[in-house]
Image (cartoon, rainbow, N blue to C red; front, side, top):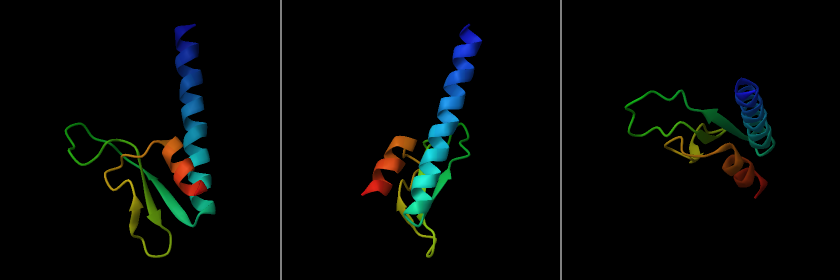
Length: 76
């Protein structure tokens, strides 16, 4: 049952990440997910929002946005 709970949490996490990516796309942004590595000072393992046309970072320059924050930012 514990493994089932972990699996469900993983699926929920993936679907929330997809929702964040779709929200960013609607706002003409790209939600980039970190490929976090241990011992990285400037990388918090979350998302960064990048302008789709200029390729400039608009939020989360240290990959410090959660999927919920991406969705909220893109709704503004």
